[in-house]
Length: 303
Ligand SMILES: [Zn+2]
Image (cartoon, rainbow, N blue to C red):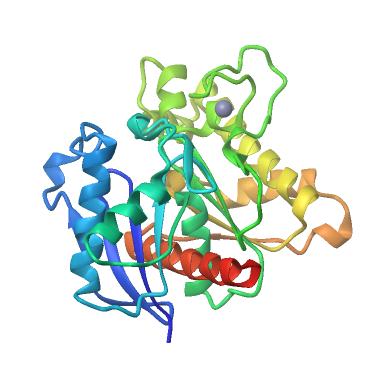
């Protein structure tokens, strides 16, 4: 019976105990109050590490038989080090897995800690929830930026949200500064930069009313998603592709499927399927825990 703890770090820290890939009991959250959403951004790495450890220890509730702890964070995470984290910039360069396991050890909890990208945690959670732990899952998270998660774990960078989907020199709204990126078209932040006079909600609403500039943008938005998805299909093969995040509300699935059909023409690659799923912290916590359990198993194999 694998007993693990999953932690997700976004606007809040949420922590849960996961036994045999199922959540046991409610999630513990910090801050409790929704009004306090900048609390984490203002916290130093040391404070974040202490807060995460405190939650893990509370959730563990004295259990000594934990297999692993998984911590999912926004940003580029490699070998336990946060290499880039635009949403929690104080974490850049932090050897987060090491810091966390040292802190837990000092509190009497000896357990391997895995740090992972939050979109990958989401993919692992969806794989677990949909009974697909033996197949390949990809998930696009359409939010402030564009997340790309994949399961199972494979070494690499996988910054799929920065897939180049346009060769137009004017496409430069991506948060990373790169030209022609998917996130520079689809990300919430990028849309606000493009339409300085309209909110993204108003743009998609105006597209429904037939406003030509907005209709054109709606098409571009869907083409960008189709193009990046088509690239992952051509690189990694067909399979299940989930769509999540608060901006799935703008999705016109028939339009997306139509563009995708025009972009993926090789018949062995056409067996892909798309599914819109709700983005919830429970799935992400399970995903972080499952990823950590698998990482701990890989460690044992190589030792
Ligand atoms: Zn970019």
